[in-house]
Image 1 (tube, rainbow, N blue to C red):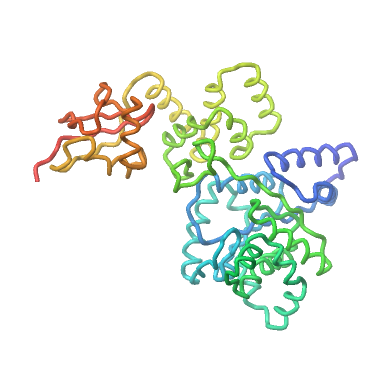
Image 2: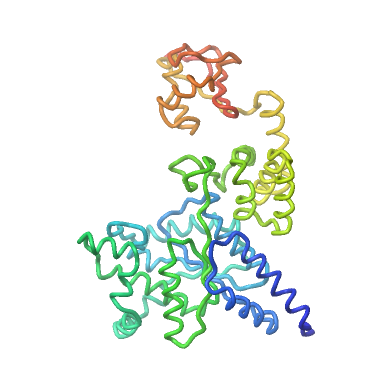
Length: 415
């Protein structure tokens, strides 16, 4: 391979930096990152990208993919991606952000969660270009002398700088000695694989910076810390969460994913493009210009929904989902495959079917349903619902709840 000239090198470095910086909250240290990329380009040697995964929560939604999407972008530049499953550290539990000691996981729980997690993250990462490691490979082999040397690399005062430890200490809440080893073990992961870059959320700041400290003490070049922001959910306020119902799941059907993406608040359209798509920063800037020029945000949002759906289901499925959305929710047609629910004999009024609505995620409670009715947001067979105790319009009641949720309740059966 012929060497690059100086102009080509700087162009390649600038392009990688632009992509790597897209949507990031903070990079420590950006000047060091540029140097690492430059050496990588000139030496034709990929950087080692580290992402540690907590095996305690296996379900993935778009909020979780923010950091995964950034890793994938680095992967596309040819860098070596190492996913570290914290099976050993998971037995201790990361105390980050917790006011109490976290319940430790069994080895079986960790392995089961990790298997589920990996199947989902490969919807984002390239399986063939991803190295998956379990940190028990090296942490379980440390003898007591090595553990003492590891502990000697920091101080109790330094560990108590971490907010959650500090808060618990001042409140005189118990801190297990083993918990102090969590950030040290995560730092050791970085040293073991000679990580050049580690990614994580802001809740991992202390742990990632501990990796820089330990690498320096072991004579290695310190890793770059890349922090990604939390993604706001569809409510536009709280972070995306399944418990809050404001999420887009990576396993959801194309039509559902597209419809949910169309619910992204206008002020978050560009943020979603930055954090959960691979669209180039220059293209996002062009979309920003269109929005600032007065174009209807709905047009840009359709592009967002197509992009997101295409990433997880392919362009053809995304096109069909778009066609479905425009015909059903813009043209006034009823969905051909809306959920059908068969009522039991005792379910004769709208209030009786609230549990079904909650189970489908359409409302959160009976009071939420009543609120929607009062606001005029519920209709049955095309007629606005005025009272929550209205009888079901059997044999087939088609409910429209809000602007986009349709459900069909079939004929009541005899018991």
